Length: 98
Figure (cartoon, rainbow, N blue to C red):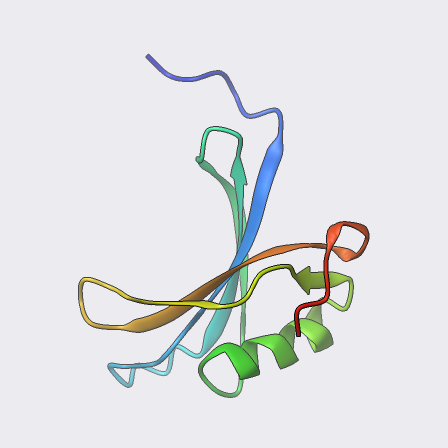
């Protein structure tokens, strides 16, 4: 049985990556999930370098009202790629953790 349609965009988070396999995939993703943990929407943009510092710089430039609200959390995918995630929010809901 499917849960009801999402009515609440409950959580936003950023993901940035290390181009471990040299594919030229230097980018940051912004994901939006609903109250059931389902992905509602996402957007991504390219960055000049990998990792959290480049991601923070690109967010300040591309989305100046978007703020990271938690520290970056490092993870490694099943394929061995390094990536980081951090919660995010628009200006009035964000805490400055930079």
